[in-house]
Image 1: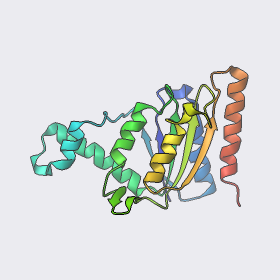
Image 2 (image 1 turned 60 degrees about the vertical axis):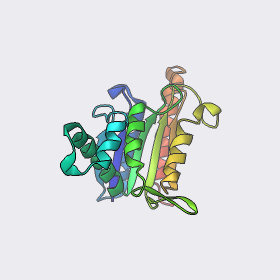
Image 3 (image 1 turned 90 degrees about the horizontal axis):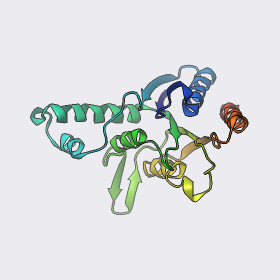
Image 4 (image 1 turned 90 degrees about the vertical axis):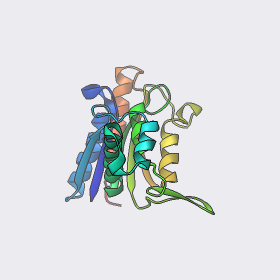
Length: 202
């Protein structure tokens, strides 16, 4: 099985989402021997924002691309190939200002590709990525699950993944991380227990 491990936090070693995505990946490898992990750190090796250059690169024949278009085309292809080749993903999604990091959105813009990961039909849109499993690790300083303030965070990711045809989605949440040391420790401990439970035999 091929696992794509995505981190998007800008906080480095101080990141709760990075700590928890690492636990998901490590537990997955321990419980399912033979897992191959591809790691992409979107904060360290960030994609640029989706732009006119991105669109031009996709629509320009390889032999006619200039240097910027070629770089864009290579970045787009690398992100898409990693995503398409993965059987499962763990996505670290901290909340910044009520939404996902812009680095994660830039990655999404490169894997949501008409004709590759979804298509439009006379009956409406159809996702082409069914069969993949996703674990979203969602972290936040406040409390947003089930609230309007979470609409552009986990709710958005579930909507986007569903649009691509992915329905096997688990969400590990660690919220209230800014509510003091005790609240942070409890939130992380609860998330760790949730992760361990994901891999227990049915």
